[in-house]
Structure formats: structure tokens, C-alpha cells
Length: 369
Image (cartoon, rainbow, N blue to C red; front, side):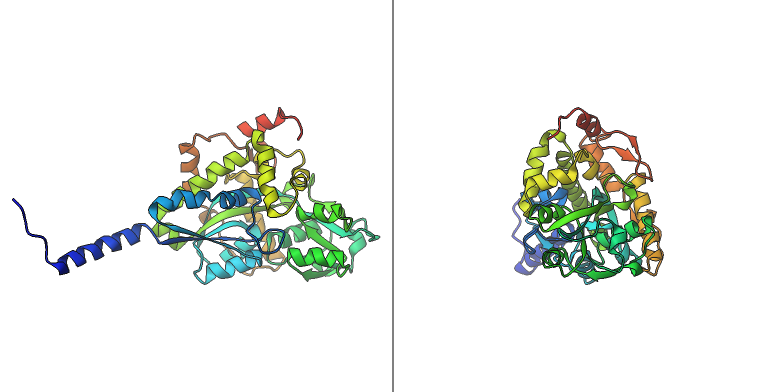
């Protein structure tokens, strides 16, 4: 038996209800913030797992069928600028946020969850002008050192100073972003700069010398970054969070596979540095060491230390519990679904390898590149 169509107001009401239900399941946009830009000072960064995920458009591809727009924001002001955007409700995810800015926003009450690591064991290099008489940190006492404050680099710098028996009071520390620091070294407006891979560009141009590196020292000196989601977004859209984590975990596995090393370095070179600088920065480290997403004992201890060090260095005032901040649910599901159990190495709280991953074993059998 045929029924007459419902009156127009009823049709409109049903459409409104359906539209509201769809909106509840799928936001119109997912907003991702990255603490950094490429070497030119404004282009999207494409190094590391975060960079290749963004550069390849992998998250856009995942959510295109849902009509969800992916909005990336790359912050020249790095972690502090990303924190400000989070605090003002302009972001859903912090992607690749370093340990210090994450610690700062947690201490100030921002509600986020750590979902996975995006990088670890990131090496830093203290560079001085090529004609500088300095050959050690001690030679720089009382001198001007450029450090990007509020970022993971600042916490690394304080760790370095503490390990060498100094404090910031022994130096004239100037807050400059990376691009400005590179210029300041070139013009000799500063006596030193704590750099990352861009140190090799300064050396190659004959502008600077490396007088100190965290490589080969205590791994707890080095920095770690993570993927974080706001509590509000995670509670509203857990299925979307899982899909996004799945994408990043899959790319982290690709970026940790030694047979992909040359392709990976070529991708990273799109950030503005020649791939051989990234190769030099990696050295003999297996890719899986840098691109390990696991929330293992080393990761947890690193953030416990970051909280305690930040308080001791007077970078934060409030205390907080680290373990409740870490949500392993999505990473565990992604690893199981993608059959990646045992893929990455695991480290203890001091950074010692306790369980080689499949990629660690493969790396031992790979010739140098």
C-alpha cells in the first residue's frame, strides 16, 4: 500500500535530525598544528614522520571519503605558538609537539592526551662562527648563545648545561627562532647557537663549526616529540582519532624501514636541506630509533624527567601526573591491526636498548648509505 509523502515541515525536520546526527559523527574539519616550518622560514615542514604524513597528504586521503577537510597550521613560532592556538580552541591535534611545550601546556591546565611518539633521540649541535676561538662550552662562559626558548631545544640546552656543571646564569642566553639564529651566527651577532640538522648547512657554507653534540652522550639529553589530541575532540570523535593514528603509525613503519632510507631522506630534503645533511645527522642510527612511536618505558620516563626538569629550571610552576596524560588505546589498536607487534625497538627509562625490534635487526645487516 502506498503512503502519501509526509508534509514538507516533517521532511525538513527529518533532514535536520539526520544532518545533526551526521555532524555529531563527523566534524567538517580536523585542525592539525605542527610546531615548525621549513628552512625558508615559512613553507610547510616535510622532515620526519610528521613531515612525510603532511607532505604526502595521507590524512587528507584517509578522510576525503567523509568530506572532512584537513586543515594544517605550521607555526613559525614553534611550540609556544602552537600552545597558544590550542589554548584558544583553534586546534584539535598537536602533531610533533616537543617535550617542553607539551609539558608547559599540561602544567597550565590544557586538556590533551598523548597518543604516540612522533620522534625521539633527536640530536642537537652547538655551533659557533667558523673563526670563533671557542672549542668547548666552557669557552663560551659569559657569551651570547641563541636558543629558541619555549621549545624542546631549551630543555635540551638546560640538560646539557646541567650535565656540564653550568646553569643559564653562566651565559647570556638570547631567545631567537631558528632562522634568526642562523642569520645571527652568519653576522656574528651571537657567539653560539644550539641547532638541529641546520648545523650542517652552516658548516657546509663555511659559516660555523660544531663544538658540541648530544650524539653519543646520555640519550636522556636528547628531545622527544609526540602526537597529542584535545580531550574534547577525543571524547567526541574516538573513531576519527583511531583512523588518524592508524595513518601515522603506518607511515612511521615505512619511515622506520631501512630499505626505504634513501627515499625517506629525499622526502626530508624537501624541507630545504640537502638529504646528505639528514644522512649525516642520522649517522649509524637505525631509522627505527628516531621514528619509534612506542610509549615505552623510555618515553614515559622522558616525560617524567621533562616535568621535573622544567620545574627545577623554573620553566613551569605546577606539578601534574604524567601517566594519566598518556592514552595508549589508539596506538595499541593500530599496532595490532597492522601486525606491527615487535616491529620497533624498546628502551628502558635510561635509554638502554632492552628489546631489539624487527627493524633494529634489519638495520644491523644493512650496508652504510
